[in-house]
Image 1: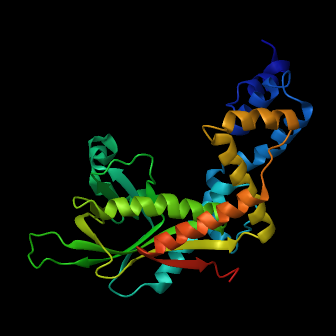
Image 2: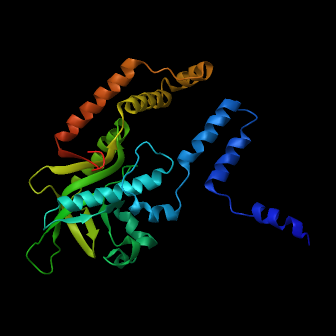
Image 3: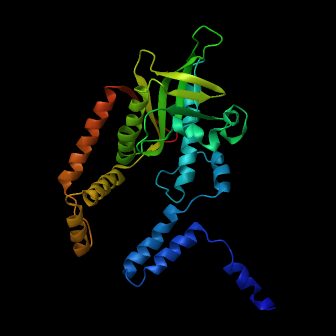
Length: 305
């Protein structure tokens, strides 16, 4: 009816992207938020936009990650996991098996349609072929639900009808950069989840068509490894510690509301030097505590070693 409007109609009916939605949300707040904050929010948009599928497929062609490049965090994370797998493959012994991704689920998840046909998780069966799943009876309680690398050996019980046992020797976490925040996440979330699994006598690993009871360490400390593509610079690490302290101050049940009101009046959040130093000491204490149960191994990507 009106050919001259077809191009505008096509543009108006296109599906909104994530960037479009975030931009509309920011635009809707222009009436009650200062122009400086609006400008800052728009500049930050790029850090939160998801990567496209083509970005993922081209990730393997990248030889080195820039740990300061946050324009595509999902892509950086995916490449880091691939590098971690490659590193572990180069360190493995002949009798060891590596799983690139292992999900941790409660046994009640077996009732979900996704797990009705476990054959799709067998080797050579599509995109899920390299996955492993640990099923546990312990409630997850918002604990971690995935490990980036698991190295295990199989121990036969002797009988053909009896399932072999998976002896889990190493569990790895892949991080684009080693920093106070990533170390804190590893020792407070991942290690806690591992300790919970070690206490669950009914937990088992499903991998490559086998359902195997699991045991940890085989007489030695379990290796908990952290693979990093690089190390965050001291300057950025200090800034990160301050940001973590600020987030804790805002989230404190007792003092948080008062901190929020003061920060609104001042335009900034005040974080004392002693607070950041104390948090660093708490991180050291956590690492020492973890070392009592696990052998901690840290590997840095070859590009930055």
